[in-house]
Amino acid sequence: MLEAPNRRPARFITFEGGEGVGKSTQVRRLLNNLADHAVEAVRTREPGGTPKAEAIRSFILQGRSEAWGAGAEAVLFAAARLDHVNQLIAPNLAKGTWVISDRFCDSTRAYQGLTGGVDDRLIDALETLALDGHTPDLTIVLDMDPAVAFKRVEQRAVEDGLQLTGDRFEKEELDWHQRLRENFLDIAARNADRCVVISAEQDEARLEAAIWEVVSGRFPELQTGSVS
Image (cartoon, rainbow, N blue to C red; front, side, top):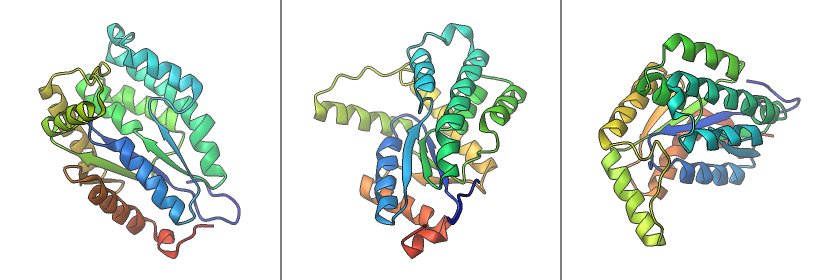
């Protein structure tokens, strides 16, 4: 990981998991905890994070690339990630700012590489090109039964008076989401040095505490209260 002068290394943390498991909420909560420990950090997401990557995100999630096939979509995701890494992730890490991302390369493997049936050789080549050595220091995989996740999403929509629409992935059948869950768990098992699976079937405060225990345990500098 790149290191800024007179600073300890900036950290790159990613959140992964299926739809509706609470990644975005926990990313926000982690940023608040980092700020409480005098850690400068930026929040981002994939696909997206930069104007060009956000344009690709919109194109894909609206279903406009679906007819092209999973292989072509994997290339689009890689193009978005390349810009994301070059324009946001790498510069922030270089100046000592931590980066917290809602999804990253593991989502490509889970969605396109496994669910979409894309050849591993293509995924490997695209990942090597796009990451340029910027592998996450820690990946939090939030795990939840898809049926439970969807019930939570529906309940929150009712409470907020919203109508559920969903992007093209959120509209898939339940068994598709179960396979997606299994894909993420398989990725975590094969990358146990980087990935930590945490059950998201607990309330937000307890989940936040569980995540902070993992993050602070992984990076001892957080236990001193400052990383500068």
